[in-house]
Length: 93
Image 1 (cartoon, rainbow, N blue to C red):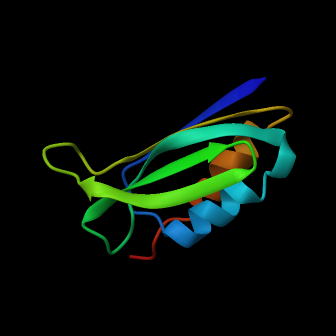
Image 2: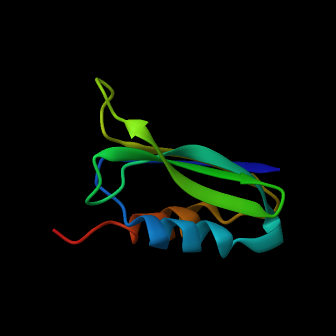
């Protein structure tokens, strides 16, 4: 198993993040973490368990810094490619 971590301060486009994670298919066993959603005051929570992937709003950030922090676990994951794909989910300035 390979564990890939991804952190980014920039806001991400939720639909793109979800598509990126779902595109990993059966190789991805588990994913979990918070997403700094572009244009949203609430933090996103991404979770993949089995074949179900969900990205939902998870309340206000409060005192926590707005930052995406994800962990993806699976077989034969290409860590640099995953990082590039998630980085490409950044919202345009």
